[in-house]
Length: 99
Image (cartoon, rainbow, N blue to C red):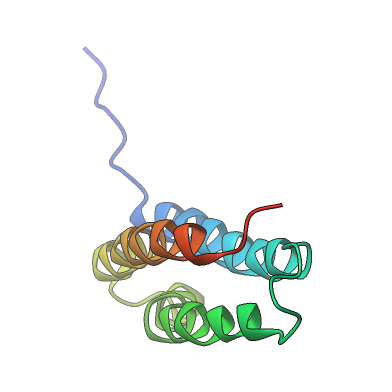
């Protein structure tokens, strides 16, 4: 019998934080390519809640991964951030003007 290797939560937290960061950066690209509704540019207001989610969940996860502290907690914080992104993003997709 061989012993199984334990999960490396620091690596998992880094992957989760990287996924959240990449999605946050993708939202800028997506919002830039949203068809102009009434020409006011209000679609850019969606950047604020997405930026707050990034700042509240993924920056602390990155910091904890970088210093090597609380890897399980940083994984949970990152997963909560992904869930928050999913909830807010589905709401925003319904608000953006269609082509």
